[in-house]
Amino acid sequence: MNRMLFSPYKIKDVEIKNRIVMSPMCMYSSDTKDGKTRPFHLAHYEARAIGQAGLVMIEATAVDPQGRISDQDLGIWEDAHVEGLKEVVERIQAHGAKAAIQLAHAGRKSMVEGDIFAPSALAFNEEMRTPVEMTTSQIEETIEAFKEGAVRAKEAGFDVIELHGAHGYLINEFLSPLTNKRNDEYGGSLEARYVFLKKIVDEVKTVWTGPLFVRLSACEYADGGNSMEDFIQLSAWLKEQGVDLIDTSSGAVVPAAIPVYPGYQVKFAETIRREAGIATGAVGMITSGLQAEEILRNERADLIFIGRELLRNPYWPRQAALELNTKIEAPTPYERGWN
Ligand code: FNR
Image 1 (tube, protein in one colour):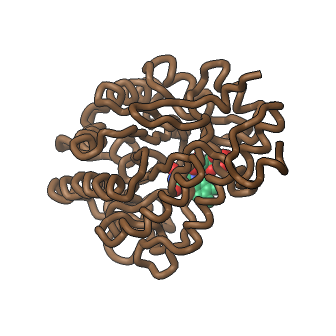
Image 2 (cartoon, rainbow, N blue to C red; image 1 turned 120 degrees about the horizontal axis):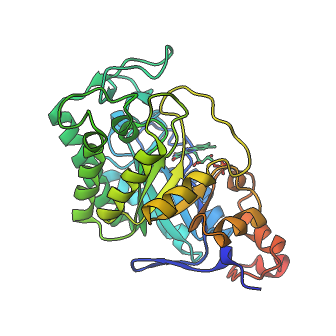
Image 3 (tube, rainbow, N blue to C red; image 1 turned 90 degrees about the vertical axis):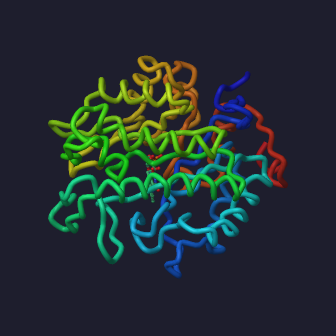
């Protein structure tokens, strides 16, 4: 029987061979603190491509050195980063997978030395430093940094770019009324809080015509945060701008307890997909082939992002295929052993 999890998915000119995406996960392994890739990154991402994830997304990669979560994050803030990233892309693509990169700025959640930046001078919690409120020119420079990041991602050969608009990092800090207290053009109404992301998308699109995803935290688990109506509106605006897919995560914009259970964020992906009419990715405690197939068949999402399960088991797609009693194209020496 044909399984939707193993059916191809085409966005613009990019065809992903199945619906399985390796969710972006920071590895904090750029151990010389220069944002460059190491042999670890090659092995780590190539292994998931061999394991038959259709799209392997590289971890949050900083567009600015002050936008790193830690000084071991990967970076894309200078041309010297392109070569290493290109090697990662080639290793991924060699196994028939497509390669994606998540462009990120950590905002007030950065733990690197020196000033850290955010829309407003509010610390995440008592342990973290208070950020500097960004000036208009710093905001413009950061928008430019995302654009430059997209130029380098293209040079490195990535098939898909995702903007990290979730988890309380910089873009999310602009979107949320809990963290954005500005009263200039970048703050106030939902529309104004969206201006930062809107400009990033517009700038990125001047240099990138490929598939563009945005990850949103589509629930803030806190009073006074954006509502589901707000996220539907944001997603509709992003769709209008030509964004292809909302990668639907949640939380971490302010300290808050997140109720975690199998598929705990699928309902957000489903609602946005239905109400904003845009493709979505579902993520969060999706650990079995059956669970993934259910989400796709019931039209709750278009792609399935797998995080920790792919850390535990790089061959998870093969396991899911066995579970779903289906044969996958596996152009590797493992084929005989698995099918
Ligand atoms: C993450 N997550 C994450 N998310 C993101 O958007 N960018 C990132 O760089 C990271 N980094 C990261 C590191 C590690 C070690 C983990 C475990 C998680 C979140 C991740 O992509 C995913 O959304 C969550 O882990 C939930 O999905 P799973 O793990 O339940 O499948």
